[in-house]
Image (cartoon, helix red, strand yellow):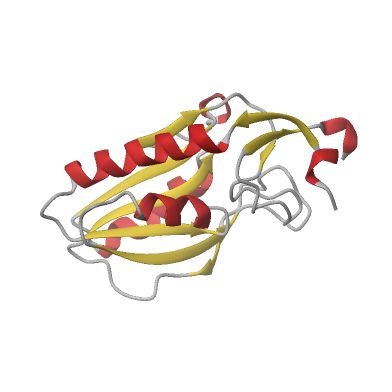
Length: 180
């Protein structure tokens, strides 16, 4: 299956993505210097962003993963019901937690995660997202680090899937809806 069939246009090319991720890594390194930082990656889409971001964070840090879902199989709009598919491997008490997410649109999933993690008593709990669809926000959540604010368009590539495919693309593209 060829991604070009579904690509309307490249929204963010590899060079632009990598430059911004390097900037985010430097900013996070400064902000968290001297702390016990844990990067909490939201699977599956956040993996590419996490691995590139980690390379630019100059302070020691841990990583862990959560898998959550508010989308059903083959569904392209959130159901609004969030379920935990995989929880953290260990405790987060007294650790500075930075949730690393690929994209935030409605904010429902991240709001749920914040409510779930706060009672576990982290030293701090913040959010870093590569892509922010602020126009789609239905839940007000604090986003501390934003790679890019993007328009309300269906995007894929660089960790974001189109029916579980094309996460490996080095760019973020806008889907050509007429070819779905």
